Image 1 (tube, one colour):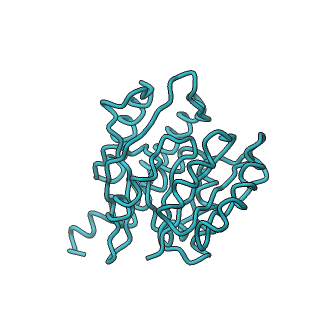
Image 2 (cartoon, helix red, strand yellow):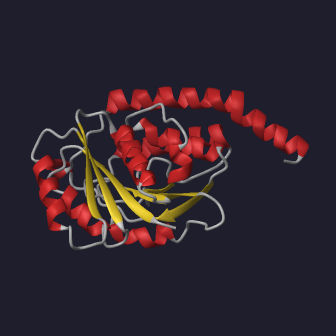
Image 3 (cartoon, helix red, strand yellow):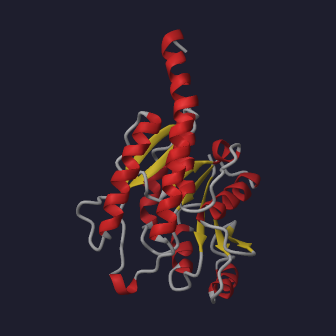
Length: 251
């Protein structure tokens, strides 16, 4: 199996290059998807490609979106490019430095050679230093609706540090384009009987004054709520009837 990484970024000049270089130690290629950055991120990424050209056989590839289209769009763009290049799995992580590349081997080890697997990173939310309080509530909210939509429990449905099976994710049209896309991907892969595994990860949250985030609490939480409504409808009309028929007929 061939593993790569996909890192979406938007105006993260202080951290994106270090994150990409740290990840390159564990995978063959890193796809950095610049989601329409308007600062010096573009020039820094261009320099990074030249700097790391001799560090690995495939190195770092930068994909640039003309305008900011959202994290979901950046991820699916990177996944499509990676799958076209022959990769089987992509490690997805944020560019702001909150995730640690040294957790990648343990996550990759969870991937089954016999069936498609999605590996979800799990943060220790209860003891995490500088964890925004709204994140704890949002995660509990998301975990509850995920169980309603799939019948399964995952302790951290909002963590963006995951290993995606590229064949399974690229064959599906992901309707959402921003933060809610990660929820849609998780639920729809579960509906497709992809094996879901979890792996504990470390996470770093910078102090309030230093934190860089593009999450818009009102707008993005509203979009996530709409997505949960759509997924609940899909579960009612598709997933639960399919599950019931399997139970009745033993398939």
